[in-house]
Image (cartoon, rainbow, N blue to C red; front, side):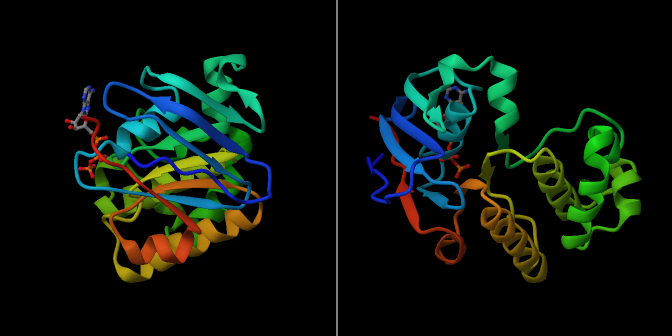
Length: 206
Ligand SMILES: Nc1ncnc2c1ncn2[C@@H]1O[C@H](COP(=O)(O)OP(=O)(O)OP(=O)(O)O)[C@@H](O)[C@H]1O
């Protein structure tokens, strides 16, 4: 994995310093509020493992900080509330999408769904009855409804047609304009160029 640092003058919302694991070679970078860092690399290189490491879902070394505060100073649930990881194949643990929202998230979720052309009835339908692309958009609604400071997205548009890719990218850009820091694993160089100012190239640890 190449090591890159953010040359911006903006303070980093998310900062990784020598973050590493058995699979992920040491990496350092910073992402400011409102910025997107794209993550590219071959299949199996360790992109998902890097996001999981940041989200505190895998064990490793080094440090990662949110607004200058080390992750070690956060209780794990507090860190995962601010730094949300969305898997390429998101898990669901209740029958419908709507049941995953807290009462205070419901209204925002319906608004977010509308921006992704996901009708309200899709949110209350049985998840097994949603298409793969509907589930993928619903997962993004679930992540954004929680209003994280940092969103770690693993191939969020892999199942979407061009119109829905455009909707997702427009929504992510709007959230970044509101201060979201985004880390985006994508195999699409075009998507990386549209959303991100920086890219890190992940290579498998030897
Ligand atoms: N739980 C695990 N423990 C140890 N190694 C794992 C684990 N899960 C995956 N790996 C290995 O770590 C390497 C990196 O996997 P990872 O899923 O991060 O790749 P990736 O870059 O996201 O690939 P893709 O683009 O195919 O999704 C792979 O060789 C994989 O087999």
